[in-house]
Figure (tube, rainbow, N blue to C red):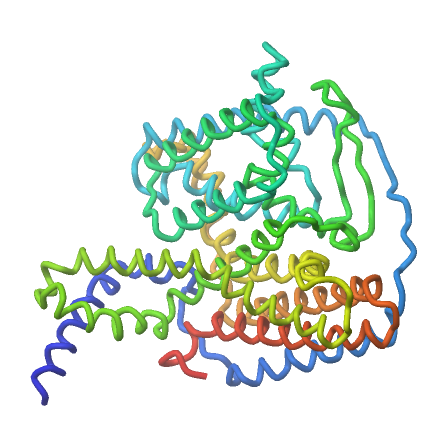
Length: 491
C-alpha cells in the first residue's frame, strides 16, 4: 500500500473517532434505527415532478382569474381576551424562568428546562402553531411584553428617539436570524450559555425599542415576530387588539387559508432575502451532516491545509474542527445568495418569456410570498420529529426544571416517554409535506401571475420557469432528506 494512502486512512480514522464516541450529536434527526428506502430516491423525484406537473395543469384549467375576495369575519370574544392576557404575562414569566433555570440548573441540555423550552417548544413548536392559528405570537411575545410592562410606568419611553429607516426593512431581523441559526448549528450552547444569550437578546430588544419605538422595532426588527409572522400568513386566523390599551379586547378575523400570501404587496428586497434564508438555512442544516458534504472539507480542503499547518493530526485536530466550523459558517451565510441567484434567474426568464414591463426586481418581489409554503414545509419535514423525541419531555422538565432530581409523589413514572416514530412513516410524511408545500406554492404563484400578466396565455407561460425552479427545489429537498438512508450518499 502507498504510505501516503496509509497516512490518509489513519488520519481519516482519527477524525471519525469523535463521531463514534458521541453518536447522539451526529444522529440529531435520526429515526432511532436503520431504515432503507423501499425504492431509489430518483423514483420519488419522478413522482414529485409528476405531481407538480399535474398541479400546473389543474391551475391552468381551473384557476383562470382572481378569486373573489370576501371580507374577513371579525369576532370579539371575551374569553379570548382573558386567555391572551394570561398568556401575555405568562410568557414574560416563562422567559425569566428559562434564564434562571439555565443559570442555576445543571448544564446537561437534556435535563434542564430552558434548552427544550426554547429550542423545541418555542423555536419549532410556536412556528408550526402560527401556521395553524395565526399571528397569536404578537400578543404573547415576551420581549414585546417586557416593553409593554415598562410602558405602564412611563408610556413615552418607548415612543422612539428616531424614525425607523425605510431602507432597513427586515435586514435587522435577517441578521438576527442568521445569528440565531449559527448559534443553533455551531454555537454549542448549554443551559448556562443559552440564558446569557436570552438576556443579551432581551437587552437588545429593549434598546432597539427605545431607539426606534416599540411598534416599529417589533414589526420589522424582532426576529421571532417576523419569522412566526410569515408562518401565520398561511393560517386563516388573525388576532388584533382594538387599540393599544392593555385592557383592549382582542378581535379575531377569519379569512381563507393562505389569504395572507395572496396579492400582498412586497416592497423591500429584505423580505425576499429573509424568506430565502428560511429555505437555505434548513437545506444547509440537512446537507452539512451528509457524507458528501463532509468530504468537501475533510477530503479536499483538509489535505491542502495539512502541508501548510503540519501533519500532527492529534495536536491539530481542535484547530481543524474550528476551521471546519468557520468554513461551514461562511457557506451557511452565503447559502441565501445561492438561492437568490437561482430565483433571480427564474424571474429573469419569466420577464423574458412574457415581455413584462416590470423590472426583474419588481417581479421577484411580486412572487416572494409564493415561496413561504416551501420554506415552511422544509422546516417541518426536517425538524418535526424533535417534538416527539424531545418535546414530550416538557412535563417532566417542568416538574424538575433545574435537573436536581425532583420527583414529587413519583409523578414522573406516569409522564409520557419519548416517541420514536417508524422510519418508513417519517420518510413518507416528509415526502408528503414537501410535495404538498410545493404544490401550494405553484398555486400561489399562478394566482399571482393572473394578476400581473394581461392574458391567460402569458400567465401560463410565466409559470414554466417557476415550475422548473419548484422541481429543482423539490428534488434537492428529497435528496438531502434521503442521504442518511442512502448508502454512501448515493442515489
